[in-house]
Image (cartoon, rainbow over all chains, first blue to last red; front, side, top):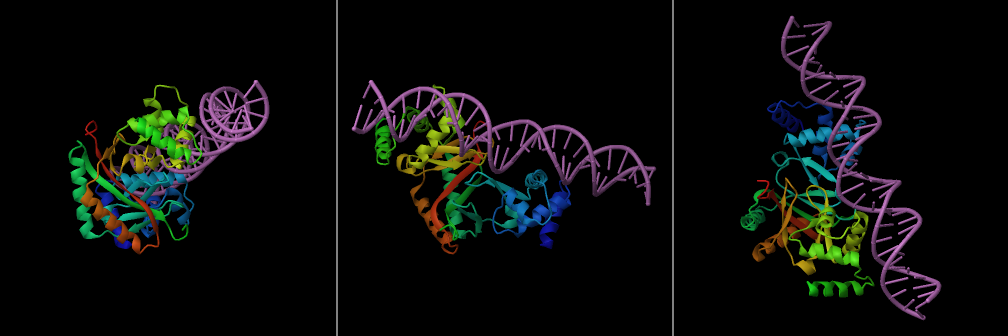
Length: 144
Length: 144
DNA sequence: GCCAAGAATAGGAATCATTCTCATTAATGG
DNA sequence: CCATTAATGAGAATGATTCCTATTCTTGGC
């Protein structure tokens, strides 16, 4: 935890951004989670009272700074997690019923296959590829 | 096109749902597209004036009936396309700048790798897998 | 240590996609 | 041709997210 905060602080400093209390709180809640979280979930997880507008601003600052990554889940709400350089490469399991999102570790060999697939698919299209999303949908234990 | 409409009509009839003019229009616009479309895009593509509320209702009837599939794209808006049994299995290229979405054909061998990956990842989680999403993000020719 | 300038926050209004409600209109079976 | 049921249109309501403005912190220069 401490080293995470230090890494982030340093990363932000290079861009002239500081890790203020609000940002620190948001970062802590996200770092403690086992998957990407919505703004509302983060707000609920935190003990302080944080207005959503402030929370969203903190999240967007951290996202723009490359500390967090943001994605729209299948339910259409934005979910935030640590950026890949902090959390490591991984994928998600998403519950289509309750929306819960959990990280899953990748399998090295198959990642290679995926990279190939991405390249071949994009080749003919004129797109410049910047990334990919690979997410598994299903029903979590609670909703099953 | 005619056979698509017939297949759909038949599929719907089994569920006691009919292909009304509004639904037919929406279906036609989606079938003519080269990728998943938002409600607004469909509305714009169609020559008739269709209120968004009616369009959304038609789309949701067709989606619930299994004729269309709906997904939230990275910009957070819902995109509709023909269900897999009508359009065939494929993936998407998404422009992170303008949101444009294009279908890409899958490559047989790598699909296998993906299926494996999905199974292995889900195995330990307690999730019942219902599907997966694999989407490539990048910049389209226009935004590049 | 103190103050001005700039950044961060709270609070609330505004926006946008989507859903809901309800009144009106069309389609179907008898 | 009528009565019942489903489909449509129009607009209000909702929920996530963003924007705006006034207030409160931080920080560097004195």
